[in-house]
Image (cartoon, rainbow, N blue to C red; front, side, top):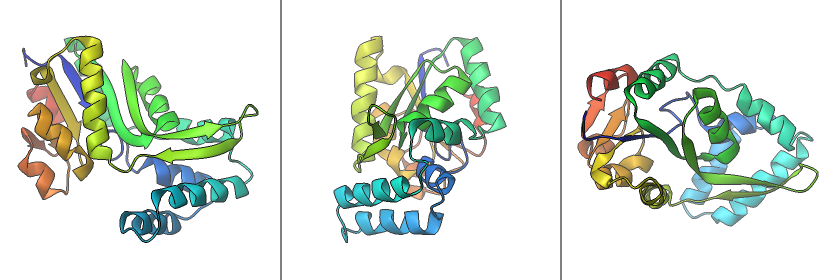
Length: 213
């Protein structure tokens, strides 16, 4: 599409099956059921997100593998969808600028961006390490929809691109706000009816984007 210059992607569920927090937790020996329980408690207000961050940090540390090399290895082993690889190659050939804007963990997003040869990324969750590479702090920004809009606007200023020149590809309710702002949201294999309602296009496969852009 002639007017679109920048294509941004969510990552979890869009380019990769699964979520960064479950991938990391299971890699460090923590069950997905326990992880989801902590997230749900925080979202319901039963515990604060600061307390959830503390629980995650201490649980990861108990694994004995909560260090930068081990976590990098876990994320480097993540499988990217074949259709994602195909689509990114197509978009590059067409000359689009490509960025990732995701609520996932920064090291994970960096690994995905590197594998796909993507121009850059923004992540809403960060891991902090000491000078020996041992995990010391986790920071998770809960208002992911708002954060994605902030990050997109910062990217537009950096690139000198207008909001109407952006297409955003996502699959979850965290993408609703950025879909509303861009008016070029592409919902891919999404189960969220609310996201679909604010979408520019609704598709079942990433490869359908070749017929749009």
